[in-house]
Image 1 (cartoon, rainbow, N blue to C red):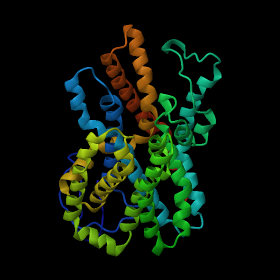
Image 2: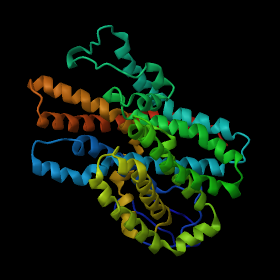
Image 3: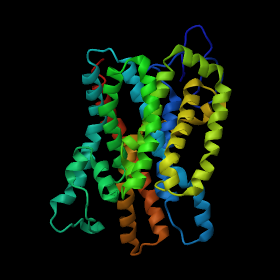
Image 4: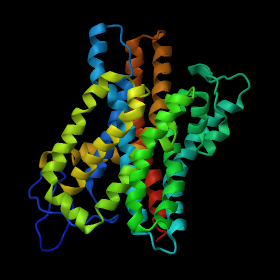
Length: 401
C-alpha cells in the first residue's frame, strides 16, 4: 500500500503487513482523490478515544486511587473533536475540488445521503419502537426511560438543538447522535460557503469562524442557563474544529502553503507537541463542559488535532506515520461510523443482559457489560460495512461531479 504516489520520485511507502516507513520524500499536493492511510488511522484513534471514554474513563470507581488514575484519560471524550477536524478536512477538500462542477450540490448531497441516511435510518427505526408502547415496556431487559426529546428531532437532525434547549442528552442510547446532528448541519452550510465565497476570501472567512466560536461559547456561558451544555452540542459552538479542518484542506491545495508546510515539518511537529502539552492543565481543569474547557479548551483541542492532521498529510514524522498507519487503527477507522452509532445502545443492552443473568448490578458487571457491548458493536460494524454500508457507498459514488 503506497501513500502519496508521484511518478519518477521516491515516495513514502507504508507496507501494510509491517506498517514501516521505508523511504520518505516530499509528497505531492493533496486532493480529494489522494488516498492517505494515515487519515484512516486518525479516524481509528478518534473512535478508540470515544470507546475508551464510555467504557473506562467515565466510570466512577469506589477506589480513590483508581479514580485518580482515571483522570489521565479524562480528555478521551475529545475523540469527537478529532472527528470534527477530520470531517472538515475531508468534506471541505471534496467541495474545494468540485467547486466549479455543475453537479456540485446534487452529487454532494446524494453521496452524503447514501453514506449517512441508511444506517442512521435503521438505528432510528429500532429506536422508534419505544414510542409504540403506551407503558414504556422494553420487554425482558427492563423498561424504557422517558424520552424528553421529541422523536421528530432525531429525524430532522435537530436533536442537538433540543438538547441545548433542555440541558440534557435525552435517552442515553441515542446521546451520541448530537455530533451527527452537528455534522449534518455543517453539511448544510459549508457547501454554500465554499461555492459562493471567492477563493481569495475563503481563508479569511474560515479564520473568522475559528475565532468566533469561543466567543459564542463564552456568550452562552454568561447569558444562557444551559450555556455550557449548549456550547458542547451546538454546531456554531464547534465551528472552530470544523473550520480548522476546512482551513487545512485549503492550505494543502495552495502550492505556496504546501511548500511552506514541507519546509517546516520539524517546526510543525514541535508546535503540535507544545499544543498537546497544553492539554495537561486542561485535563485537570474539569470535564468536557467545565468553564475553562468550553471557553478555550475546545479551540485548543481543535488546534492540537489539526496539527496531527497536517503531520499525517505531510509525512512530517516517520514514527507518527507508523503509528497511524497501523493496520488495526486503519481498519477501525473504516468501521467508525457504525461503531459510533451503535456502541452506546449495545453497551446498555449488554449491561442489562449481564445484570439480569447474574441477578445483580455491580461496577464489575457494568464494566464487563460495556466490554461485551463494544465487542458486539465491532462485530456488527464489520458485517454492516461489508454487506450494507460499502455497497451503498459504492452506489453513491456512481454519481459524479
